[in-house]
Image (cartoon, rainbow, N blue to C red; front, side, top):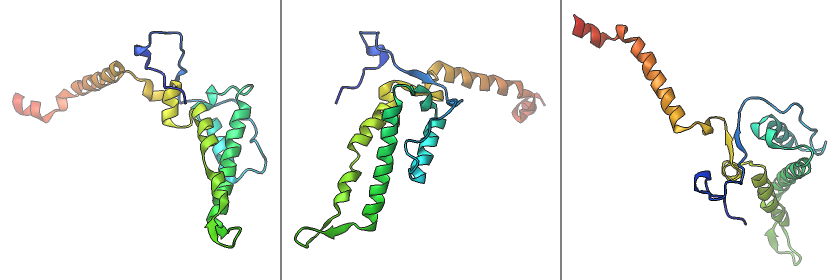
Length: 169
């Protein structure tokens, strides 16, 4: 597994480009069709929600679509396997003994997690990719400026402050 990149301020080589700020508003013009018409409803909903998310704007439909479809097919297979395992957790082994249902091995998330990390489907993987969503990109000076603006607005209303009435009276 590769090492995680250093924060931008600590890098000697400045040629590495992070993905950067991705604004939260807006949508992809048109979501591609789901990978399979027979997807479970939960997987189809996840597909539509992905294309409505800000991460969808980072996906190139010409180069990334096959890997993204494979990810959602893995989601679907994992959900189907989990349902089958819940229906029958134990089965008979080759000599008649009770064993854990072998379909449990199909639920192992190895390939699924690798694809999720490539597409930034978790907060940690987004940080590793250098994706910053919406308000996470606000700097400390932006936050302080916003706090100062709030203080100025409160100062305009000092005529209504009962403490000042008591001092003036």
